[in-house]
Image (cartoon, rainbow, N blue to C red; front, side, top):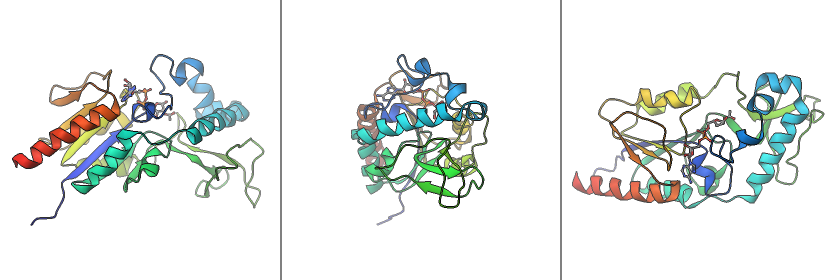
Length: 236
Ligand code: OAD
């Protein structure tokens, strides 16, 4: 028996976590309807009013601690039985980790981590009892802490690795993203020619005709994708 598994690369956005009760950004009622993105999620905004930015991410952490992985996250974990699954996520939550997925790359940072402003390679994971940070929060050496989030106007350090993963995909899947934010949205351009591409989203952004769109929410859409992939595996 040949036990080399096909490589399934999955790019997820906020819609992946919507069924866990985490707000998306650009849907009606989404976070960017209630907050000015450049105030709370940009480098300039952080320089101007760090307190507001800390408060914004404190609130996101409180929401995250109330959330659980949904059936979609768990189904992606299950796909590891048949595929080498690589997840590239724009999400800063840890729901793919908590669902047990093995290979996860965060493009926009991680909510439960902070790093020091003075030495950005000093990264700390917050413990669940102490999730609140302020402009006065410091580490043991007196360095100031900031959210481990990629703000708008900052580089996306993991994009190179994400492109490498994408170029190696045998199957590529996009789930729950408006494809509005670059460079994440550009990953689709790095998929090799002939590789099947699926896009699961109840309100998908326009994509080229060779992408199979599954116009459903994440958990239902992933169940459908799993059926399609099973049929394809059996048909081979
Ligand atoms: P958006 O809020 O832009 O898009 C969310 C997508 O999820 C939309 O296409 C919705 O149709 C879809 N959606 C809603 N409910 C869904 C469900 N139950 N199942 C599946 N899909 C659903 O979020 P992103 O595209 O992830 O960055 O946003 C990208 C980046 O913009 C974020 O990472 C964040 C934001 O500003 C930073 O803050 C750095």
